[in-house]
Length: 267
Ligand SMILES: O=C[C@H](O)COP(=O)(O)O
Image: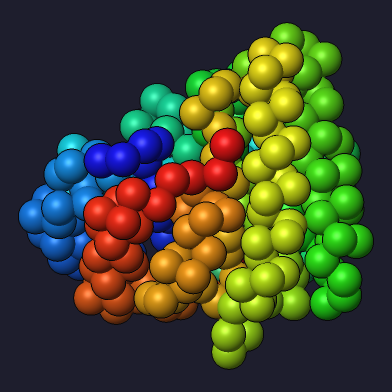
C-alpha cells in the first residue's frame, strides 16, 4: 500500500428490505474478504444499511467492513420517540454514522443547527460522522467549494466548541448529482474536494479534527469514477451503483490500480 487507505462507502438508503440487505452483506463480505485492496489495507470499506439491519450487517461484515447508520439523534438518551441515539449505535457496533444527507435536509427539514448537533452527537459517541455537504444547484465549482467549506465549519462548530476531536469523513455530495444518471464532472469534483481537503488539513493541524479525517465524493458514483478523481479524493461514497456487489468489487479494483500506480492522496 502506497499511502493512506482509500475509503469506499456504501449507503443502501431505503432501497432494500431486511432479508435483501442481509443477503447483500453476506455476498459483499465474501467478495471483500478475498479482495486484495482490503487485504493489503489499500482500501477501507464501510456499509450503511437501514437501522433494522445494522446489527445483522455488523455480524456479517465483521473484519471486512465498518458498519454505520444513516442518521442519529441529537441527544444520547431520553424521551425522544422514534429516535436512535449515537450511544446505542456505538453499543451495537457502529463505527460511522451519516449526518446531514441531502435527502434528510430536503425531505425531513434538517437545518444546519440540527446537522451541527448531530455531528457533535456522533463525535461525542466516538462515531465518525460521514458528514454530507454539497451545494443545491449546479453552478461554478469555486462557488460550490466556498459554500462547502462554510457548511463544514458550521457542522463542526459544536464539537470544536466542546473540545471534542475525532475522525470526520466529509462526503461531498452535490445535491443535483444525487440520484442522477451520472456523477458531477471530474473537474467539478476535483475543484471542490481539493479545497475541502486543504481545509481539513488545516483543521487537523490545529488539532480540531483527527488526522485520519477524509474527503470522499458521492452522487451517482460508480465503477470508473475513482480512477479519474483519485488525485483529489480520499475515496467514494456509493449509492445505487453498489447494489450489484460485482460493481463494488470493480471500485475496489480501482483502489488497487491507484495503489499500484503509486498515485498518492492529496496532502
Ligand atoms: O448516499 C449516497 C449518495 O446519496 C449517492 O447516491 P446515488 O449514487 O444513488 O446517487
